[in-house]
Amino acid sequence: MPKKISYSNVSLRVLIAAIFVLSTFAVITLSGNVAAIPTYSVSVTMNSPSQKELNPGKTVQFPFQVKNEGANDDDYYLNASIPAIWVSAGWTAYVTPTKTGTLTFGSTKSGTLTVTSPTNAS
Image 1: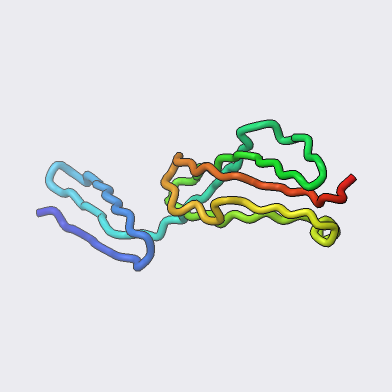
Image 2: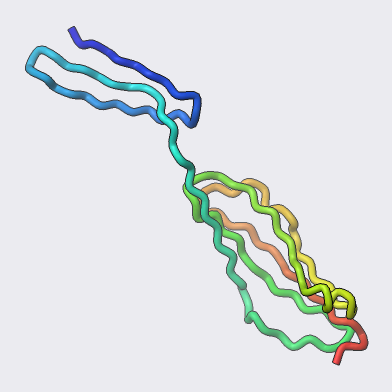
């Protein structure tokens, strides 16, 4: 009769089935749960030229795509930051949306980076 040996781990459950044939009459099956290390990876690409002309007091937008390239579902928070000296001079920058929602492997979410220059920019 085959013997079954089982074990478990509280982490991510991955079924392992290993069958060892010891002889024509004996089969041992090992099955259970093991911890797996999730993999995460993301890419951000611009959909248009990365440089645009920006006149004083005007706004430009840069469309982009966020892509989940990891093996697991993931959520991404998005924000824009510019140097403090630019902020004090009246520049603004922000992204929409600020959160992608859950992206599965290979899926993408579109966003926009918006930059506005002060009216006194030179």
